[in-house]
Image (tube, rainbow, N blue to C red):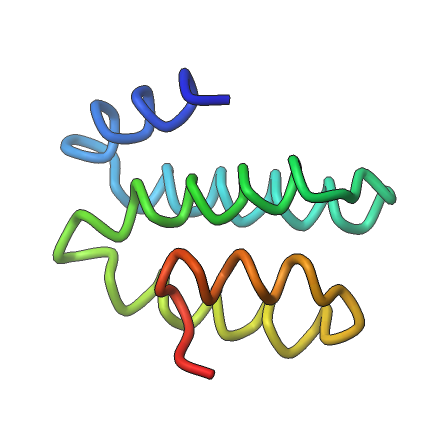
Length: 90
């Protein structure tokens, strides 16, 4: 899903909040509909990393990453990917 990362980077310049909303909705939808696995977790972390490059979105990304880390505490691979992407400090 590298394509989505590039689209997010381009679009977030003009629509940062909409991009953040999209990532939050899509990642929650995937996780809640049992679309789980390392590939999905890497994708979620990479989407958040792409948005974390925008200063205006850093606080939102940090809050959402922390939310994922706590809410899906049983998904060790997700937590690991969030740590590897340096989106959470644990």
